[in-house]
Image (cartoon, rainbow over all chains, first blue to last red; front, side):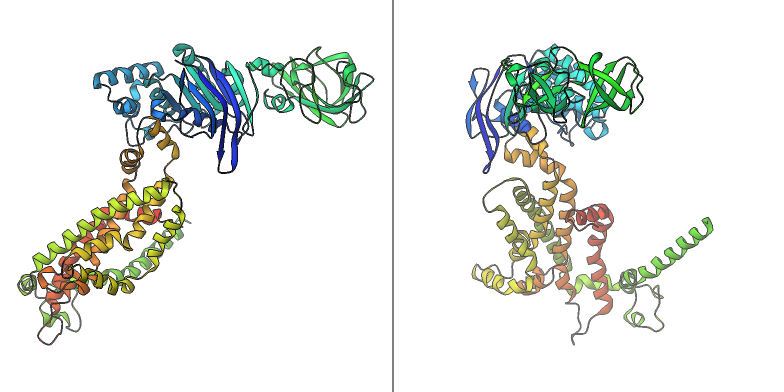
Length: 357
Length: 279
């Protein structure tokens, strides 16, 4: 087990910078998820940690050891790939044993490790099969088994669940989390799926265009996004945004509607974007009339697509609701749950320090 | 409905059967005629099966020329060329597919231009070169030129196409598992390349087996001859072909080719697919 320290790392492909001055400290045993839209550099960062890519500047350390120039095999890491990367011409057992055999570990020892890992993942009956004879979920499990067998200091996962169907993804998500709990090894996990990030991580690193946007626990990021990007990226239904400005301490939307956001004297005259999570809307007589476009009941919850003026948004309510399309409902915002961002820079404007952990 | 479909199928089969004739007839004629006396070969009307079954021609093949020796020559040259080409083309193909080095694309284009140069163009300078090193009337030109020269360009291309299609993640995984570049080639890429290697092997074997121009240029003593060249030597005092003997020799020559085709039909077609020529 080991901590991972990424300090001011830069990486370019040719003249194109892909990682820009990234610094992340990952504690021993932590489960950190790198998340961001495609092309944000998250996979490159993972490959840098693995040693599959070199860096142009900065320092990378695993434990107390600087590993900038250390070969992947000597970094004491194991990686699980998106396409599993099992050797097709070897059996499951041979795939799992490969790295140990390569290191010259004694045969009996290798077998013990393989069987232990297979037992953890419940893939013992598959050991003599070839990868092509396995289902996607089984292959994923073998790929994890291959990583466990190495007994590494750090596990690296590169979008390991994106080739699985939705149901299996949820199941494997739980299994990986349980695995982390059991092994207590540092894990670094890349995904573009914010639900995976929210549900699995101890801490999330949000990346965009090769830069760190925010680092924090899932709920920190959910409750206190430092900018519009993070606010819009996390959360399954997407935050509702309203453009406008503050007049006489009140938020007025670009349509000229006074919306029920908290008064802010300090933002007088400033162009801002106010954000609300769908589940932070409330039905209240003190609210502002919104026009209902669509109502989507799912049983336990009801999702409502509505409009304040021309600005559309999604809101989510527990329980059931009746409101025919075209009718209006009075909506307010749960106290203290609104987010205010500068319209130009996109930065959060609530005076609270961003939670950079 | 069903009836019209089966009728269509029947018509198609009939058409294909007719189209087969131009391909099958020469082989049929070669084999059956080798068992006929000369007088019957050109009899009119022609006979489909020998009326008088004689095997003399096969004995004469070995009397008139050191045919067994020539058979061995062809065989060992083809095996050497195939083995060497497999080694070189897979190494070069892997390098072009996976190693990023300055000028890689330019170099690859250069290799491909080798495909555009007919061997007739290079044979005279090659003859000069081999004459200078005293390798004329030896088998060296027939082994080295296909293995290292233009003919292996196609094989390098096929191997490169195959290796380019292997997932990069496999090699990343191998690197993390502790393999170096050559070990990745040898232990991961090569075992997975079996179908491509089979195709390259078959192509190369047939190429070498059928080689005609090079042997007649480079070789002059009958015990060094290869089969295609030896076939032309079964002539009578006036230079006319000794038909039944020549056809017997040709039948014997065709055996390995037919065997290779029958065993490796599938790989042969897959090999064509790797060149990117599939529809």
